[in-house]
Image (tube, rainbow, N blue to C red; front, side, top):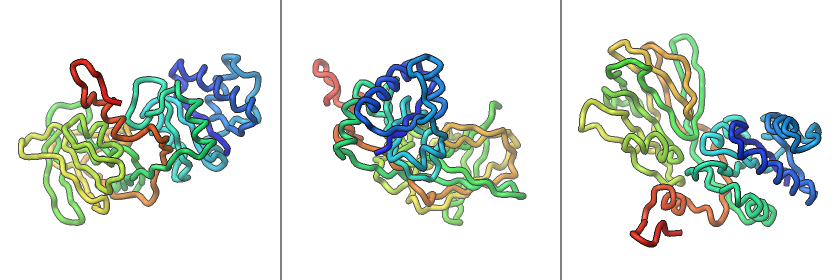
Amino acid sequence: MVYGITGNTKKDALWAAVAALVKRFSQNGLSYLLATHVADGLVHRKLVTSTVSCAASAKELAERADVILSFGGDGTLLRTAHDLGESGTPILAINIGRVGFLADVSVQSVDLAVTALEAGAYSIDERLVLSVDIDDGEQVGRLWALNDVVIARAGSTGLIALDVMADDTPLSRFWADGLIVSTPTGSTAYSLAVGGPIIAPGSDVVVLSPIAPHSLTVRPIVLPSTTKLQIRVTGGHLPYVLAVDGECGAPRDDTVTFTVRRASHRINLVKLPEGHYFRTLRNKLSWGVGPQSGVEG
């Protein structure tokens, strides 16, 4: 097995963890590749003497590694997934901050995680991905999201109006601060913050969650993942932004139509036996906390 290693270089905890892992790999004759920005940081900090032979671009990691170890948090995992593109290379997210919904393996458990990987004691969790076509009347661009697609007003007061079609049938006009189209993976992110439901990862659905809607009758909607959504901002002429997995583009006007649907590829996440989704929910959301017992394991 060839291990790819990447991570968030803005986190100080990254360097000691990766240096220790590289040492283990070297001592045990395990093959590994380091993302170039991580390799450069290790050399700069004199934690390794040379990484020339194992430094790799994102494309090389996607093509040559059997599994990617992503050190950081949920945001780092999302960036790693986008760096790898549609390669399907499995990702194991290792948390070096707060416990996340996606990065649920603690940095203290890296050695145990590698031991499990070497023994084949893991599973692959295929996650639904959304594609979004951006049609400005002249050309169509395409992006994809593991978590969510967000259309929201850009820095101005007042509501925007969003006309939504579902499978070519009018669904509603939402007067709101914006709209979130979320995968099950992203249901515990922005969508949850605006009152959307928690969706188990294996569910083949998407969630449409309005952001601060003007009408109290407007609620999040769960739709089959096969649904084709067409969204257009109309009325008010207020600037708005499109954010895909948290990455925002420039403010837009009301000449653009967004088509959101299930993408043709999936993102593969590595799951270890102890990393059950329900355990993560209990720990992250403090479910089952008693006055003395604390969070159930």
